[in-house]
Image 1 (cartoon, rainbow, N blue to C red):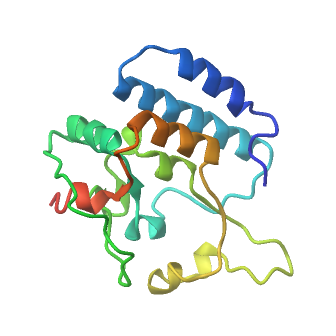
Image 2 (cartoon, one colour; image 1 turned 60 degrees about the vertical axis):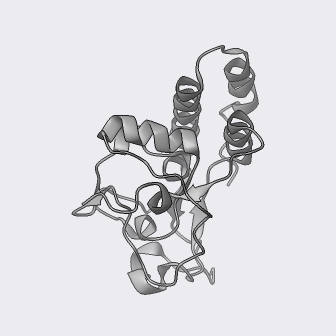
Length: 178
């Protein structure tokens, strides 16, 4: 599904690029653009399965940038680590360090990946699996119908971070919150 049909991401990104705000504020504005794009997709009828309390996607790799880690650190008061190397994809589900009783404790400042990732109801006759029917253990390998953050937003986020930055899993920045 093209979530940009009624939401002009390019226009929003041009405004964003001209903004002289500091990096954390610019990331926050990118997050707002992502939220508006997601809201637009839902308003256009995207068949979203996600609901409060569902946290299957929060148990697998959640890529964030250093600036997003800094924002989470400032919000929570926790010191972030500097990842030595990106985490390999893990086989066993490991909850996000900010997930408590299946609720996101950093929802207002959640990373771009969390803002734009939605499980969608598969079309009738499709060989895709419903997120609700996939077990947590099978979620990573299940053929789900998902909506991901628009590539233009991901590219803008990486461009803001500079050539030396890369995504790392949230657990690499925050190995243990509990």
